[in-house]
Length: 408
Image (cartoon, rainbow, N blue to C red; front, side, top):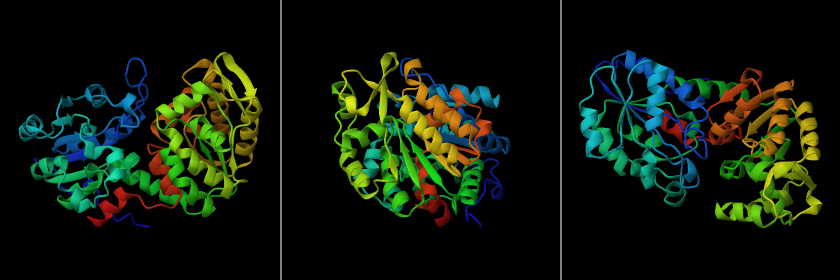
């Protein structure tokens, strides 16, 4: 089935200014704010290299972090340095995204040169919260600051940001309104691979959902369950804790404060609705673990300490489900895997996925980072750069980015 998306091979880019939107949003060390997993940087290299080698005057735009992910909202200076090292050629960086300094620097580029602009999420219009609160069409987004200041400077727009394909930010869907557009190597490969495996997954099909960034999981749960795209949902991480709150369990002051401070308790009513409608398809933790690897049944909650993992009973139950599955999709770690006391659930579930005979698909920055810490990614059937995009695609939802590329 044709993707109906133009390839960069269809354009002669020598001497042309090319605007390339990538997704190099990477997991950071919470203390040093340094990049700890370079998977998305590595996946962006083929398109960057091919365009630069073809003589394009290449400008790269990307985001890092978000309002709901503020601890990762940092400059892209380190990303430029790492891209330069990996490519073996200079990747210039400017601390401006679409202002006068950036626009002047863009006009000075020569054939084959690469410039990475500053984190585009310095603009509110690129924030997820803006997207959710202000509903704009792609044509209306073409009038936003970023697009109207950058588009006139370019001959071609290339998108290689499959990981953000479920978003409708101006940088993703509005440049196509004004410029000839093409899909990058990664975007086209991801879409082709997912299209080949998402039609009719073998049964039983199991979704394993964890991690801290839970908005994508909750956004797709109803459709996945109501359309029977998944037979079982295994919840852990903050997703599992929200489910426990929805069932009436008190976690304890520290865990509940952690959830409340991030505004994640807003998902409790939705979780309650899903659990009532699909009680047999959503599995929740039966025990949890705190620091010092203290494990306790959910019947013994609340606890004064912060919950950082699922317990042994839950791990064993989930391992059995994964072992019996024919298709497994994973998004998010089971606990605070960066800490030894919180790593057991994540490690054991990843080992179960790696050893499963099922078709296994994983995606998302933190998901891939956690998997890389415990297993060989070669043991996974398909590793996607997308987290939210992966889940929504596999649940049958249309991805705004792919729709925009096809329209163009």
